[in-house]
Image 1 (cartoon, rainbow over the protein chains, first blue to last red):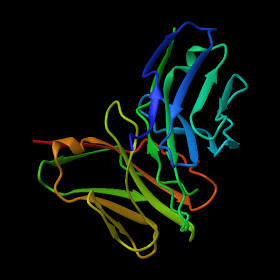
Image 2 (image 1 turned 135 degrees about the vertical axis):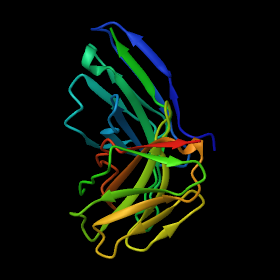
Image 3 (image 1 turned 90 degrees about the vertical axis):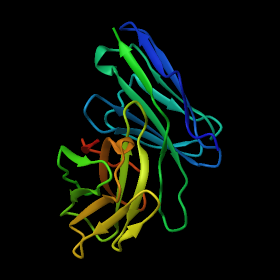
Image 4 (image 1 turned 30 degrees about the vertical axis):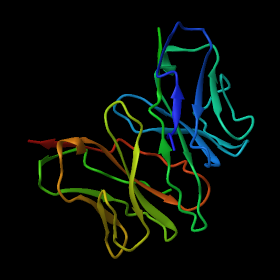
Length: 116
Length: 111
């Protein structure tokens, strides 16, 4: 078990450019989540997948954001036409739900995005 | 999911017990209390969770009041490495982990 892996760790981009982040979850986990975190705040939910199906998206996820999990394994989060307000830490987490509906999230170390 | 209220920061002496409170007065009967912590530059880490009984694991103890409107996370012998932001979260057992983490409590463990 190597944990949840996110790449890249840091991304600096110019306003208007597109960026893509990757998340590799723990292999046996069927749920995968994306969160965004700004300085001094806790993580905010963006979207989540159950296997390859995207089950829910937050209102925070504008049309410029898209997430995929094509084979129910790794996931990508793409931001098109980045804005300075997109600067944040993007966290990925994975989980499996047991029969008792208990769910423990395991987080990656995140991708820090800076939009200049 | 019910909202939680935590103090913004707390101090604790190394080796002493750290008691982190959380209020969740609007908690529903099917909602669990979860605790996570986040050390600088890392993603949040699961600590413990419970429904109504007190829970203990290798990291911490969770004490939930009888009316379930508040809880306390106890780190029995705090070390400098326990300095982190601690999040108390309430969520139901279904529907995904869409809950709001809030700002948490920043715990400073001092030598």
